[in-house]
Every structure is written in C-alpha cells, then in structure tokens.
Amino acid sequence: MIKKASGKKVLIIKTSSLGDVIHTLPALSDAKKALGDVQFDWIVEENFAEIPHWHPAVNQVIPIAIRRWRKKFLKMLLHNRDADIERKEWQNFKQIIRQTHYDAVIDAQGLFKSAWITRYTNGTTYGLDKKSAREALAAYFYDHPQTVDKKMHAVERVRTLFAQSLNYSLKDLPLDYGISQRNPSKRHENNSTTDRKTILFLHGTTWDTKHWPETYWIQLSNLLTEKGFQIILPWGNDIEYQRATNIKKSSHKPELVKILEKMNLNELSDEISRVDIVVAVDTGLAHLSAALDKPTIAIYGPTSPGLTGTYGNNQQHLTSNIQCSPCFKKHCNKEKNNISPECYTEITPEKVIKYIDKEVYGKW
Image (tube, rainbow, N blue to C red; front, side, top):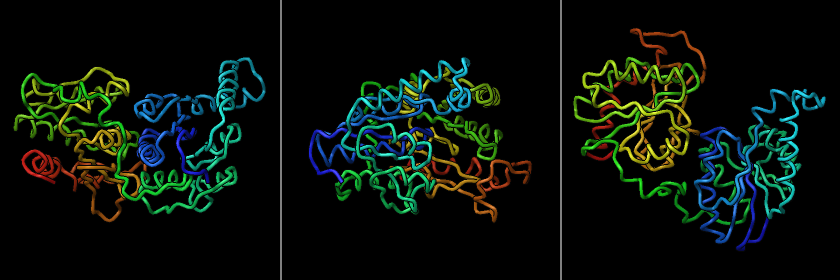
C-alpha cells in the first residue's frame, strides 16, 4: 500500500452506471480529508462525464466510450474503415492514460472490462479480490486485490476499498458526497414565485417492472396539488415526456404542475438542488437526489434497496411485502386490481403522501 502523505495522484476507474458513479463520490471526500493534498483523475463513460467534475478533488475527467465502441469491436480489430473513428478514439484514450504516473490506480468497478483498462495505466493497481468483485476474473489484473465484504451497501464498499488501498482509516469520517454545495448561489432559488413547497417526481427508469403505475403518479399529483404543493416533472425521452404530459393534463390544478425542458445532468442537478422533496422510482437519478442531500422517497417494487438503494440523510425506502418481492425480474405479468406489477398494490399514493406530510409537517 502507498504511504500516507500529501501530493498523491490517484486514477479512478468507475465507468458506469449513473448510480455506481455517484456511489463513488464519498470515497473521494474520505481520501481528501484523510490524506490532504490528494488529486484524482477519473475514467468514466462519456454519458456520465459531467458527474466527476462536480467533486472538488477531481483534477481530470477522462471519458471512455465502451458502450459505443463495443458495437464496432470486431471492425476495430479488423481495421475496417467503418470503425476508423472508434479505433482512433481508443488509441487516443490509451495514450492519455499512459502519459501520467499515478501513485495508485483504483478499479472501483470490479468487472473484467474495467480491470482490463488497468493494463494500459501507469501506476500500482488496486481493486477487489476474487471473492469480493462482481466478476472474479477482474481480480487477477491488480497488483493489490482487496477483500471487501459483499454484504455492505455499495457506497460503503467503495469507501472501504479506497481506505484499504490508500492506507487510511474511515473512523470519524462522516458520509459526504462532496457535491451538495456545488451551486450555493442557486441552491435556495425556488421553482415558484410563491413560497409553495416543491416536489419533484423522478418517474422515469429502465426496467418495465421498476415503473410505478402512471395512475399512481396522477393520483399522487392530485393529492399534493390539493394541499398546495407544486409538482416538478423532468423527462429524458419521449415516453417520459408523454407521462409527464398525462400527469399535467389529468391534474385538478394544472397550474401547479410544471413540466421542465429536457435537461442534461448538470441542469437537472441544479433543479433537484432547488426543490424541497423528491419522489423517485428505482433509478440512477434517485442516487443523485440522495447525493445532493435531498429528502427522497424511493419506491422499490421488484427490487430491494438493501445493498444499492438511495443512501444518505432523509432517505425513505418504500418496499412491498408480497411473497414474490423482491424478484429482480425485468418483466412481470402479475396484476391485481389493474395494477401491474402486483407488488405496487402495497405502495400506494396514500402511503407516499404520509411520508411527505411527515417531512413537511414533522420529522421522519
């Protein structure tokens, strides 16, 4: 392990997904507090390259495009002209990560694809050992594989990996994502011209089964606007925009429902910083809400918040108690009372609003 000292340069490999990238931020805050003058460079998927820039300990963000390159992987190997751009990008990427000597290179992903990248870096490599990594083969690429309990929450696993690799203690280091004050000038701006409480709905996600029923979103919106809350609706694709439109059209008080313009991660982060409460399904943006220290009510039907749920202050996880939940299935045909998947019949708008009332009028 490297000796505790200032002026260390560390390269992080944590490429995706959105939630995983956000889960890494507290480890940087820990290292900065424990080691002093430590600087990080970060290899990350190009779609998430905005996020590492938010943390003050990050010096250089190095985008990678594994998701895009793999579509032309064979053509790149065969030097096919159709993959000239991708091949040049890959060569340029390798040149960038080789030119700096790092005191430590930490693969925080624990996958074969991320471990493979360490072969092209210039520094002593660290990562999870074969019993700790998601893909055991990854451990064979590291100079110093580390043992980290798989039963820890993902945030604590990364914090522990960094502490063991960089030789410091996590004792007396509180959880700190390091980004909650990144826009202090905008932090207290309100989305309304009044003093209304604002609630942002993170209603979009990936799996079909993670979607809370649209009828529930409409019901929740109406319950909240009747109480005088303002609803904020972001969206990232046509399906999400249509859902937001349906929520507004079905509102008893549409003037209190605001559909945002399409936003990038920087803009959406600013918007989340300005609202009072977030209601979210199981989505990467829910982790952003937690990192920004926002009271968040996160809804988990077929999934579980145990190891990868939102993590931080004022986080409420609503789960189902039916026998088959959590099933971790992307598709489900079970339905009850026109609600699908069936597990959401136990996570109603009335249940959600009880937690909103507690946050506004009391304490969780």
